[in-house]
Amino acid sequence: MIQNHTPSVGKRGGARIAVVGAGIAGLTVALSLSRAGIRCEVFEQTKNLREVGAGVQLAPNATRLLHRLGLARSLSPVAVRPSAVEMRSWDDSRLLGRTELGDACEELYGAPYYTVHRADLHQALLSSIDDNILHIGRRCVGVEELPEGARLRFEDGSTYEADVVIGADGIHSVVRDALAMDEPRFSGQSIYRGLVPGEQLPFLLEDPKVRLWFGPEQHCVCYPVSAGRWISVGATAPAGDWSVESWTAEGRVEDLVETYQGWNEEVLSVLKALGSVGRWALHDRDPLTRWSTRRIAVVGDAAHPMLPFQAQGANQAIEDAVVLTACLRGIRPDDIPAALARYEQVRRPRTDELQRLSRANSRTFHLSDGEGQRERDLALAGTQNLRKQDWLYGFDAEAALLGE
Ligand SMILES: Cc1cc2nc3c(=O)[nH]c(=O)nc-3n(C[C@H](O)[C@H](O)[C@H](O)COP(=O)(O)OP(=O)(O)OC[C@H]3O[C@@H](n4cnc5c(N)ncnc54)[C@H](O)[C@@H]3O)c2cc1C
Image (cartoon, rainbow, N blue to C red; front, side, top):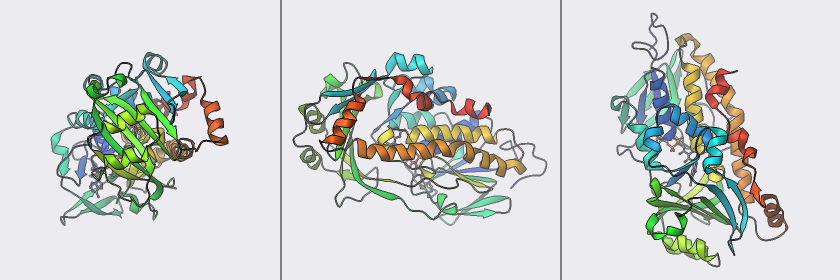
């Protein structure tokens, strides 16, 4: 617990910070704190720490922070810089709309747009933090607020008392239970995910892009990752009675291809090239009305799980980590409650909006042919001005906080 003589959070003998979960959010918190000279302990339920075989899009709002944390050298050789996002129609693959990325994006925002294999990102984060702060095989089953801290309870019967507990334990967060009584909301959609060796789909590598095809009740997205060695594919489908929500649950490629019968040949060639697929029932939650108590706060999906239709969940987790660190840096232990309140106040409006937009896109991406679809296509037509993304990609979470 807090020692009276300690000058600031995280110094030797100072306040103890516990992070629950070693996903993208938890590891970025650990890295960001360590760059600020603040030690934390990370408790992760799994013994086998690795990310799933799938891709993730990282926009400049997150890559500028990752680069600042020192990850440019490890990410840049494995990431792909797509030249554009292209949206196409399900039946004839006609171009509906396009947003320029690549150099234009990097020049405008001073940071690249990346498509990355999750395992590459996870590895880059893991290899940048001290091994000895990571405690694997420690499943948290409860958290209790104390007058000047919080106590974690683990499945193995052990406990850990900290001055601050950061819940980075995903959509089913145990730490979030200390803040709210809500439950995940089932979207009615599922997503098939998989990877195809890049050499099998050379037409997707010539000019790497994020390609989306919109159609009735479902959409498909693909992009290269791992310097083009793999194509990451995500294809939604109505969930029917599929309710499993796990990165490791397997689906059947035959079912996926069947669901996309009648779609254009490009989409079908991508789906048929998949050797195996995971299938995931998509959930989110309503925005939380509070993210922190005096000694407990949540980050990433534990705070704001969103449908993946803005490709911003991980990006926002990275913003959370950096802002939380900036709020905790250099403060006295007595000031922890105010620091957590400031973190929450700064972050919530932005992630509330992204949760809302992600839900709205689940309608827009899946319109049946008809008036609504025609209106959508009209709005998308031509090249979208990248500047429309200023509020999202141009945002520097750290600078915004420091400039308050
Ligand atoms: C299909 C799909 C595509 C997506 N695409 C994108 C994209 O392109 N761009 C983007 O920004 N976002 C994307 N997202 C969202 C992104 O994946 C998530 O927002 C992000 O992974 C959240 O990271 P996290 O660390 O908060 O949670 P998680 O990744 O869920 O990590 C939580 C960690 O906590 C551990 N844990 C859980 N419970 C406990 C416990 N009780 N005790 C100890 N440890 C525990 C878990 O084992 C895990 O390691 C996508 C999501 C999906 C489903």
